[in-house]
Amino acid sequence: MQVMWHAPGGVSAHPGEQEGVKLAHGGRPRSRQVSSTSRAVKRVGVVAGLALAALVMTGCDARDAMRFGWPEGITPEAKQMGDLWTWSVIAALIMGILVWALIFWTISFHRANDEKKGVFPRQTAYNVPLELTYTAIPFIIIAVLFYFTVIVQNDVESKNNDSKVVVDVTAFQWNWKFGYRSVIFDDGTPRYEGAQPGVGEGNPFAGPQEREMHHGEELPFPAGGRDDDIRTYLRFDKIETIGSSSEIPILVLPTGKRIEFNLAAADVIHSFWVPEFLFKRDVLPFPEQNHTDNVFQISSIDREGAFVGRCAEMCGTYHSMMNFEVRAVSPQAFDAYIKFRDRNPQATNAQALEAICQEPKSVTTVPFDTRRKSDGSIGATGDPNNTRLASCSPGGPQ
Image (cartoon, rainbow, N blue to C red):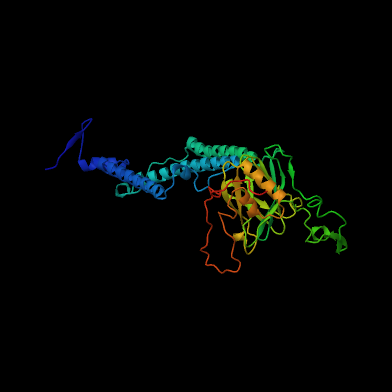
């Protein structure tokens, strides 16, 4: 017996024909729609669960996770750059999630199946408002990111004449030399001036220039006819710390003070990088002739501790071992350190650190064994967050 039913308006039809009409117009049984939706929800849930599990198993807290791989900054400029990085990544993730959601929506709810074979889908081409929207949104995002990037960049690269400490940084293959050009003390003591008089002044290209003939024309020799060994742009100071293959150079700096760094290289291009500064700058020979800005400043170092520094520019065989350490101490301890080294010019940097109750050796990195006797398993020891010597009181022999 054939079952008939009456549709509104008195038109009768078979169930199979009516279902065919629905499918011809892109419809499908509700049970199948619900099934597809539940599968999509389950997939999204699985992905979210995996992401949460990965975050929990890494042991990262919320602050670490929000830095997206960057170290924690220790200067106001670093915090600005960290915030810019965080919000840029968040904006990128929002756009990525939106794009991924649209992709998964399309492949989940609009994929081809047996019911849609031979059915021409509805076309949505030439949607002018939609096309204008997704063309304008990227330009708006770029403009916003550009604005905040310029603001942060200007703050990071700003310089003034109020630096309390001026440090001369000299890079060479494959180590560092740090000198204190000037220091303003907190206790009213006269300003310390450490630059060696008559050293580090003059233009390496000044003076008579030798010339050669080339097709009847005079051409200057390289470096203006001066010898490659002439490096009069390099600065030398009375208080200096020089690294070696047996000792990591430690740059002692105060917290809470504006510090200026003057960079120069004695040979090839290097790069001064302290990861916790979230900033690095190339160190070039002949900075003036190479039209480089070799000076930068930081407003302050916000906390005491030891922070590893590295060369971030491939500079030769032992580039990877060209490390140093920044030792941030209190302003009072820093003043005592400079005064000790000024009064005891023959004392080593380690002895000066011991005089202010600081670990005399680096606690963040170790020298490179140039004879390769070790198996590479020896690492730095000590607590970079607490570099004070136990049972020590400052104010020893001066």
